Length: 431
Ligand SMILES: *[C@@H]1O[C@H](CO)[C@@H](O)[C@H](O)[C@H]1NC(C)=O
Ligand SMILES: *[C@@H]1O[C@H](CO)[C@@H](O)[C@H](O)[C@H]1NC(C)=O
Ligand SMILES: *[C@@H]1O[C@H](CO)[C@@H](O)[C@H](O)[C@H]1NC(C)=O
Ligand SMILES: *[C@@H]1O[C@H](CO)[C@@H](O)[C@H](O)[C@H]1NC(C)=O
Image 1 (tube, helix red, strand yellow):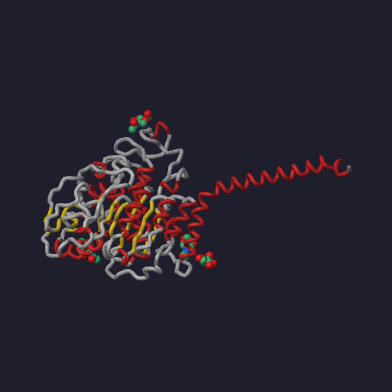
Image 2 (cartoon, rainbow, N blue to C red; image 1 turned 60 degrees about the vertical axis):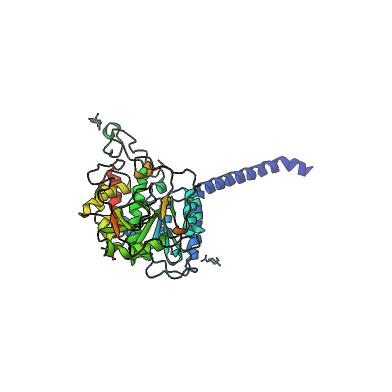
């Protein structure tokens, strides 16, 4: 009976203990949920740091010193984690311990279209000679599905880098992401008391759109001047995007073109895998072709990069959010002479991305036959599987091609002083 009599009191005590347990559990679960986002990056970081346990992790630059010197935006937790990832050595060093002396580094820059990236990576896996080189994948934003695809690559050394100041990494934590005080669309800054400078058409910045030009420029500065792996590399670097299908002969063709370039085409700054007209697959002539710089599969060497880098101001202050149109309208014309790119008469790369994805009026949007879902039917024929450029061929030059050039005012989207400043800081960061 005594037991029975005590029961209610026991019950009350048990209830109190139970209630506090529930509260603790709820708080714990909530904390877990809050931490989940950063947790996945943390585990990614530590797993990768372990992978490189025996490698020297001494960074090339003192990032915190750079941040202080240039007064860069305050970094988010994610952004700081990404800086750490950028210091990691390449994967697959056990499989491919040495790069060929005359290798051409490949840089693949991506955002978040995993179904496209799969197609590109699959095409790269069939590229002859790729095992002798380093593939750098430059990410605009941190996306697990994208990482998974890159981590699966086994056909060459792979190094991932992440744009630490991507608007996609800052989310709503202020510039370069969105901040509540920012002007939007056609706001009048003085009337509304918001922050921002409109572009030449009266529109305020859109973080999603400016991220394209920021990423390209940061990546260029990083791969030429900010990375141990490429710091000593004076030869060519090839740049491709997450929606460029690469033919098996691309790498070996490119090596031939890079060698021939100074001999056969002194006005050529670059070598291209594809025609500058993204609709064209080439003329199938028995000659090489020199034409305006294209934006699919372009490659150039450190001398050319240094020339581009000296035009940082032209690049960063031009009111167009497209990196390629900015280059055509300001940077190349400022070189003071013709700027050609050398290529073969048959393409070794095809742009297959969806039209209009990035909005605006770029070259990419004009092309027909864009696909939506990554399920495309690009077929590499026999002639695309081995070198199909000939050292004996003459060079035919396309002069006065149509397209963006000096005098074009830009499509806008790049009027905010903060974007221009950040862009200039990228040029200084590693230099
Ligand atoms: C790294 O990983 C290996 C197994 O993959 C493990 O045995 C080792 O303890 C790890 N080292 C560190 C420092 O975490
Ligand atoms: C990097 O710079 C910071 C700030 O200037 C300094 O405190 C730190 O000692 C530096 N680290 C190294 C490894 O030089
Ligand atoms: C913004 O508003 C101010 C004050 O009403 C006005 O003087 C100015 O012309 C406006 N600016 C623009 C670009 O419309
Ligand atoms: C890089 O390419 C340019 C243009 O073709 C050429 O003038 C220069 O000599 C090359 N630089 C190196 C280091 O090979």
